[in-house]
Every structure is written in structure tokens, then in C-alpha cells.
Image (cartoon, rainbow, N blue to C red):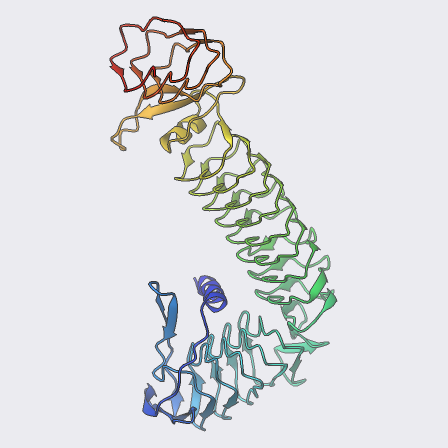
Length: 506
């Protein structure tokens, strides 16, 4: 659950406006034994002993605004934390956009999650000796920070602590720190096997040290000036959001040694990325993995993948083809939504479910074959997608399409069909088979014996149609079913037809 909170913060910080409110004199408690005092000049002083309360975000879905439960409720200009204070709570100064100066005491041991996230004007931070814990996203998006020194006392650094700090050019670590080190300005663990952070101010080409076996979450997040990243063979795992918003990357090769990728948001917002090779061994493409990669043209999904999660390739507007390998059983919510350049999609026979809106707004797909084993298709899965949907008669795929109101076409035929179901969803019983969307160029047509209904507009504007045979299985003829069939002479309607809708022959 913790990474989900982290990803929520990614979205909130990216979309919501910064908190800028004029300070008014106020005072109160912010912990069991901690008080705060905010003066009219924007100075916030924290005094007392012990730990600060943790705070949370309150999001207003009506107007898109947000605030935290921090009692000062505004952005101070400067913060003075006096001796005796042991911890800064989660979200303590979250999005305090006017904050420029911070003084921290030697008594401080904990800097909570997102304590200074979004403090875009904070130019300098001196982390005191005795600080042992720096939480997730603690200084995320502090744009004015240029350098940071980690003291020897720090034994835990969370995910994405300095990610998206666009002005950061260097991270230093005390040589006496037993848990972390810095190599040429980047942050690693002491054993140099975990790559924690590349400062966003780095540009050009970058090579991950050969000792590294894991690239941590958010490690390159916001490194928009990097054009090439070399990942050495030996890296086995990559954390979520690792390359989030690396807009300058055009291609990336993940070595075959990588078997564990925490995909959520890993390449989201990499607008310059044109191609990517995912290694064999990866079993799932996670949520938002490539969302918003507007430059992505092709992607190779390995045979080991069994699921493609929600929004995985959403808004990849230049993605023109994708092969989904045999073994994939599910395609998630909006997985390919708005991939408007997508022309060719091959769905594997292993596929069982296609979630809601999965291929919506894929305006370039003209044909798509639904595998026989597909049992579930979500609502609006093909909304605003002009594709002709092919499926085998009596297949689970055909029935799944019909349940969502999508007609299907059997290969090598010139008309669509749709199964009709009992209105009681619990029964899920087929009550009929309706013919629809007959090709307009037909001259002679024999309706198959298993068809029970002729759908609305089924033969509309078939102006060359001169002969039709309707079997005894048909019981209904729909609205405007034969409208515009100007060449069609009189024909027999079997006695089994019990309903003929308005304008059926006009």
C-alpha cells in the first residue's frame, strides 16, 4: 500500500497548484508536547520536546484543490525548529511554496514522509547530525535545491527523497556514514549495490555503476536532461517510477539479467522514448508503466508476461503496433486508451479478460480478432474504436462482446451478429441471435438458419439487393431493417415472425 500512496503524491504534486496563502498570526499545538507560532512576517517556530504529529492530505474533488491537516494551514516563509524537537511529521510542510529558509536542531532524528515535498522555493537544507530517518518523498520537487549532504547518522533513506528536484546537481554523503555513500554525486548504499538517486541536474549520457544490482524507486525520476542511460548486466530489479518523466530519453535497453520490475509509472511521462525492449522473465506490465510516452512507436513485450495492467500504454499516441504474446490472460482498465496511431493489435488465444475502456479512442484500429477464450469484456472497452470485431460463432469471445452490446463478425462473412441475453443478469441465458450491419454491396443474401432476429438497419441502403431468404428461425424484424433497399422486389416473410418494427421497409 505504501507505494500506492507514493504514486498518489506523484499525481497530486504534478497536477495541483502550489499552496500560497498569506500568513496570519496564530499559535497552537502540533504534537503532544510541541507548540507552533506563526507570525505575520511568515516565520513559523516549532518549540517543545518530542515528536510532531503526522498529517494527511484532504483533496477536494469538486474544485481540484487540496490542503493538509497541518494546523498552520498556510505556507510560511521561514521555519525555525528549536532544540528539543525530535521529529518532523509526515506532510509537515507539504507544498509550502513560499518557504525559502529552514533551520533544524541537532535534537532532530526523523524527517517524515513528504515533510518538504513541493517546497519549490527552498534553496538550501542542512540536515543535522543525529538525523537517522528520512522518509519517502521528503524533499520531492524542491526545485531550487542544488546540493545536499547526508550526515553520518542517517541509517534510512526512503523512496524518491530527492526525486524531481530539477536544480539538484550533486549529493554528498559523510565518509563516516555506514549505510550510504556518494559516487560522483549520485547516491548509493554503502555496498554500492543499490542505486538510490541520480540528481535531476545531470545531463547527457549516464552509466549505472557496474556494482549495482537494484535501481530503486524514483532513482532517475525527473532527470529530463539525460539522453541515454546504460544499465549494466547484473542489475536484477528496478523499482517503480524509476525513470518517471525522463523526457530526454529516446531509447533504453533493459538487460536480460533484470527479472523483477516494479512497473507502476516506471516510464510514465518519458515523452522522448521511441522504443523499449523488456527482458524475458518479466511477468507483468504494471499500471501506468508507459502512460503518456507520446514518442513511443514500438514495444517488445516478452513471452513471460501474463498481464497488462490499467493505463499501461494509455495516451501513447504514436504507438503504431503492439504484439501481445501468448500467455497474457488479462488487459487492464484503459490499458491502451487513446493510442490513436495503433493500427495492428494481435490478441493471444490465452487472453481471458479485457477490462473497461481498454482500447477506447484507438481510432486507427480497423480490425481486431477476439480470441475464443475471452470470458469477460468490460464496458466501453472499444468506445470510439472503429474496429470491426471478429469472433468465432459460439465462442466465449463472441458472447462476451455481445454482453457489452458489441456485434461481432465471423471470419469470411459479410455481416455482423450479436447474441441476445435474458434481461436478468443472474441467468445470463442466450435468448437469440440477431443479424446486423450487412455489407452494403450484397446482391443476394440467405440469412443463416440459427438467426432469430433481423436487427435495426441490418440491410439499410443495400441498394443492389434483389433477393433475400429469411428462415423460419427469425421471429423479429427491426427498425428500418430494409430501408433504402430500392432494388428489392416482394419477398416472403415466414409466419414465425411475430414482430415487425416501424419503418422496417421504408
